[in-house]
Image (cartoon, rainbow, N blue to C red; front, side, top):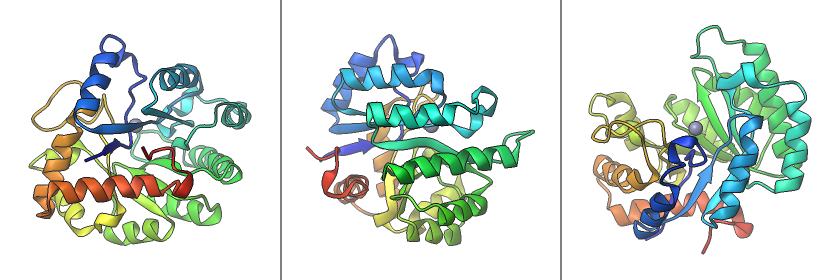
Length: 258
Ligand SMILES: [Zn+2]
């Protein structure tokens, strides 16, 4: 069995004291690859340096919509340069967050579109963060086609899911499904096709129900077994298909095959 954590902020300072130990444990748990989404320009260099230290970590670069106050207009040109220089495996995490209070829709849309254009130019998939904005995101994704990607922590409707699937997207399934009261989400992950699912932890955020506090990629097998139980499918099959789904985003050039 081989697992991939498709969304994990292992570069964050929360992991500075025990990153080595966590990664040793991941190896033991068959977590072969971990994708690291970026949040702001100032975090890129540590993220890249962290990924260079460990071959199982894969960098993505981007400007997260939750940090609009930190982004500058020149960050887009800097992103393009950083992509050329560091060759990340995706652009992320990018998107639209209309759940935030006082959000500026036009500014978020502009930033998202500019980053989709960079992904398109470099033929890279994208890691998406979308809250309360799936229809706007889908419209922008139709206008600027990219090589698919993963919609992290998807919580939209089945119809929206179908539209993402048509555009080559997977859905990141994380610790939120372990919360007994998340009935809508737990139903949703039963209804989505297995061929569109990916596993993720979003560590250190989004803790599992029975694991309050700092989330960790080492909890990925618990998300896997919860998903298997909800879908009434075997752990082995869910592991195999979700791993294949993520590997296939990069087709034959996949950096995630070993
Ligand atoms: Zn994230």
